[in-house]
Each structure stands twice: as C-alpha cells, then as structure tokens.
Image (cartoon, rainbow, N blue to C red; front, top):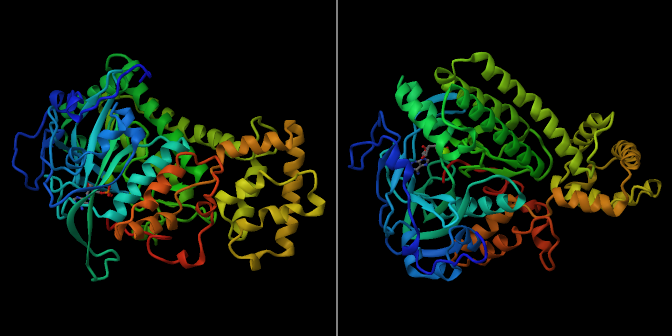
Length: 534
Ligand code: AMP
Ligand code: MG
C-alpha cells in the first residue's frame, strides 16, 4: 500500500473476492455435521456464535495490511466479526477439505476441523488475504473434536505468528485474539483431569491456507479430476508468474514449492524454532510457517529437542530433523502430482536439489550467524565444531550468539571471552578446564577466520546482530503472558507483541525479556514441553 491509499474507516468497506469457493467444486451439503466430503475442496459452514466475546489483542500491522485504520480494531463490531459472531457483507465462510500424513502415517481426511475461512479480502493494491478464524466452532471436518480452542494455545499462536514475521521468517499472520466468553473443557495432560478453560479465537491472515494435504486427499481417492482443478487453480492464483498450467508448469511449481519450503526451514534453524507437528497437513504450499501448535524455541542448544510431548519417544519432529522431514513431506507432494507431471526423473532431480540446496543454504546461514559472508576452506568444520561445543554444556543458543558477537577476538589469551559468554550457560558447574581448552581453540580459529574475512570487531558485531535475534518468544515468556491473561491482565501480551516487533534491536527496559529460561520453568508444563491439547 502506498501512503496515499486511504485507510478504511469501516469494516463493511472491506472488499471480498471469494475466488476459492467461486472457482473450485464445493460440498453440496450445507448442513453442519461430521462427514467424509468427496469431489469437493471445501464445505460452507458458519462460525458458531458465542456468549460474550471480548478483544484480548490485535495486531495493528496486520490491520494495516488489510488497509484497516487502527481505531476499527477497538470497535465492538470488530470483536464480534473476528470472534465469529457477525459476518461482513461479502463474506462466504467455509472450511477446507484436506488430508495428510500424521507422524509419517497416512491419516485420510482431516480438513479444517476448527478453522473457518471468512472470505478473501482484496485490497486496493490487489493483495489477496484470506481471513480465517481458528476455534470458531464445529465444521464437517471436526471429527471427534469440538471445533474450539483455548486461550493458552490461541495466545501462543497469535504472538508467535507475529514474532516470526518480524524475525523475517515466512509465516501466516494474526490479526486478532478474542475470548469467546464461553469455557472449553480440556484435559491438558491427557491424564484424566479435564478442566474448564477460557475459549478463544484467533483470526489468521495469509495469501493462501492451502496445504500439501489439500492435494493429497483427492489422489488418495483416485480423484484425478479434482487434483488437476486444484493444482491448476493454485498455479493460476498463487503462482501466476509460472504461466498457464501444464505438465511443465506443474513441475516448475513443485520446484518453487521446494525452494520456498527450504527457505522457511533454514530460517527456522537460524532462529531456533521447532514446529513440533510437521505433518503434511501442516505444510503450506506457499512455504509459510502454519498451524502453531506445540511449537517451541530451542533454549539450551539441543538438536534432538522437540517441544511436543506426543512425539517424545520418537522425536520425529526434533529440531535437527526438520530439514529431512520437509524433504519427506515434499516427496509425498511429488508422488501426489506425479499423475499430472508424468516425469519421475524430473521430480527426483528437484528433490535432490532440495537436499543439496539445503546443505549450501544452511552453511551460508550458519556462517552469517558468525558474521561471515565469504566461503573459505575449513568453514564447514568451523561451523560444525561450534555446534558440537554448544551441545557439550547446556548453552542458551540465542544468548550465545549475541554474546559471541561481543567477544574481543584480539584478546583471547586474557580470557575476557569467559566473562562475555558466562550468562549463556545454564549450569556453570558444567564448565570444565577441558571445555575451556576446546572453546579457546575454536575461538582462536574463528579469530583467524575473521582476519581472512577482513572484518573488524564492530562490523562483525553489527552483522551478527542482524541475523541472531535477541528477543525470541521463549516458551516460559509465553507462559507468563498466558498466566496473566487467564487472570484478565493482557499487559504481558501487549508487551511481547510490541518488543518482538524489533527482535534484533536491544530495547531499553526490556532486559527481562532476554533472560534465559529460569530454573522454575525447566520442567513446568507450557515452558518446556507442550501437549497437543489446545
Ligand atoms: P493439527 O495437528 O493441530 O494441525 O490438527 C490436525 C487435525 O485435527 C486438523 O484437521 C484439525 O482441524 C483437527 N483438530 C485439531 N483440534 C481440533 C478441535 N478442537 N476441534 C476440531 N478439530 C480439531
Ligand atoms: Mg493443522
């Protein structure tokens, strides 16, 4: 949007162009009950009205994307619409039909069980944004569940989508977080102790919510006609630069999906994000981070960590495994579109490029975290040796890189680096002479490498601070904001939303949001591990 574009002053002025439902085949059944939906990409369904909706928070920046003046977000009408209690003129609410592989197994039809798309907004500068409520009630895809969401998980999704955006990670966005006024019963630990929690709705915003699973489901049912319609629709609508749909364009499209997915994963690795549920129904066709559930942030650098309690024993979705899982998910997508492309070798070649591309981009990213932009012999070992060092004692990944940026590499023998890095360690008693010898040897190599690069201290600090965030949505910080919000105090959400907008810049008075996980949070639910209950 240019600054000359006027902001809308009424929600009713939003312009909807519901291309997805107007173009693709829909479910003829309009009644809302759980069922298998065949030969259709969606079902019409309206949000369920709730008792007494209230606004918890909204993102003015996302409102601005929709060209909404900030004052609109404070109106009762806004709260009503984005909690599912009123529809705007032009909205045609629907739930999408898709399937997916969950934890590596084909799960059949899943679909938007608690997401309802309100419609597609088209702005004056021709940007297309789906508005989607999560937690607004039952849909034909709710299966055995209730279509609802609770405050803790909704708050985590709201904050994380925005935080990821400001970190520079491709993601769906979040416009608003509302309380429904109803309670929702959840057995958070699946241990037979259900409790009533506050019901909440997040309004998510993205150019498309289509997932790999949208394409997989028709193929699993041998419905190639539907597959072709959806692929062609996606190419024309979301990838128009590829040209008119054909076998060749479909191949180019797959290649771009691979590139975008790769870029997203490299960013996750850079900032220490672990998605937690990388099922194929949670993989966006646009390479956006989507469906924030039991995600988490690496605090101590442990590549085998996953936040998801459901995945504790196999750890399929652990931090270090995310690139391989993305590759596996893309392989499923390749198999899905094979009947259109009819060229196994070409698809395989693209998948092989993904693996190679990841090695390269991951290496470039890791070097950038060290302030290095050129490629030199021995860099690969420099990076991997540091990552090994980070695992030998419990080290906070985020703080380590910020402190490393401050280490004086010309003064290593005086051991001033020890003081600089001290606060990045969780357990000082783990620091041994042996550790120090290894670290010092690595720092000496790093110092020599920086000489080859020809960068001075200040320049290195500056470069590193642009890629290594200081503020990330640490799991315990979310939990503190949740605890307050459950008591009706939204100041924690507001503070995090505001500070996380500038994650690379030190902000006065916000030191408490940079602190590594306190001991009390080590094993507390919500602070270290999360269940899927949401
Ligand atoms: P997820 O792993 O959270 O992406 O969810 C997997 C599937 O379960 C999706 O089809 C969701 O729509 C559905 N689902 C999750 N929670 C609920 C719920 N409370 N009510 C209805 N469907 C749900
Ligand atoms: Mg999902």
